[in-house]
Length: 188
Image (cartoon, rainbow, N blue to C red):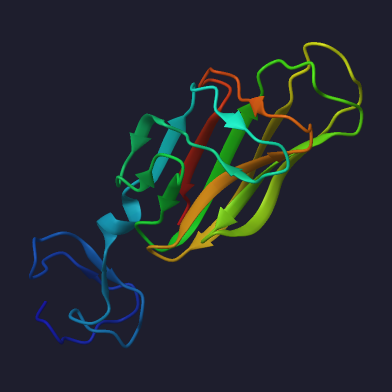
């Protein structure tokens, strides 16, 4: 089909000028040059999974960015690790975010103290994914917080996961990536 040829809704172009990939049109008045969309961009999985086994120290009453430093997969090299950990959307769309964190054992928990994890979009709280309130005070307590949410990201917008607690002293995360991870998948 020649560039500029009008297309009807969902016409399929099997021969395109770039590289002979399959194209479709989502606009009934579109043309091959202006409205065609590469199908492979929709079919390619976009996602990342990182874990942490570093036993990161979390100060009290401070929203601390979790540094998921251990790479599992990252299809678009979209994650920046370190104290400013973030996932930057390579493609505009809806993303499913799953996260789980477990603390190291501590004797500092008291009844009513809390821990939570938040999903932040471009540095602003988007949602509280999980909330833990201590129901007892004892030796060897751990907290576990996990949650998921769907978020719409425009390409180049970013997210990070932050944890906060009210124990009054520093707490450490458990040093095992099976319990402390984030998984990000583009839905569509």
